[in-house]
Image 1 (cartoon, rainbow, N blue to C red):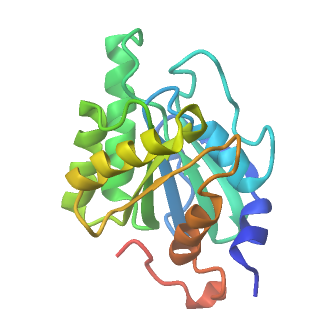
Image 2: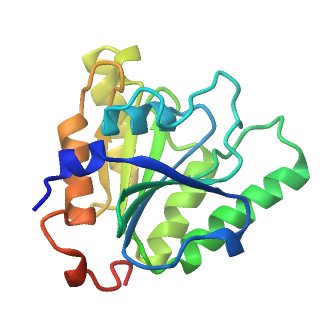
Length: 210
């Protein structure tokens, strides 16, 4: 059987989804990654999958405007959700993003878990809290990743971690992470291992999102 590191390194771009009817079949296992614009989602995905340009990075916040699917194997997919919370995006586009994200998270049966990415220097903005609370109300497995940890010293990292840990339910995972240094990579891989179950064959996977 494939281990989680090998599985993630196989990631390939599959499709960009602008509207719900374009989604691939709702089967197998999907893990979604969400976060505010410029929180470091793309850098996290590239580090996790050991590919420098798998997820497109940009200095312009709000660049990702669709659900981006990456194929790990025929029945496992990683999904990069549109960034949220960027003030300069038009009202119509904000409503489209919100509707697309909410509908996907609410209806997708293949969804096994949600990673919420937050800049460690600016965690738990209102939009983050809204998403976390909503995911919790659905009972969706949830893991919070405080990115760009290399921007802070260890003391400040711990302070930020404890601030978030103290406000979040105990069953929700919280960790620090740096795409630059690799800090927290193994811990994050363990989360994906639990959700993607790479040791199980495709025939053993049944309604992971339930």
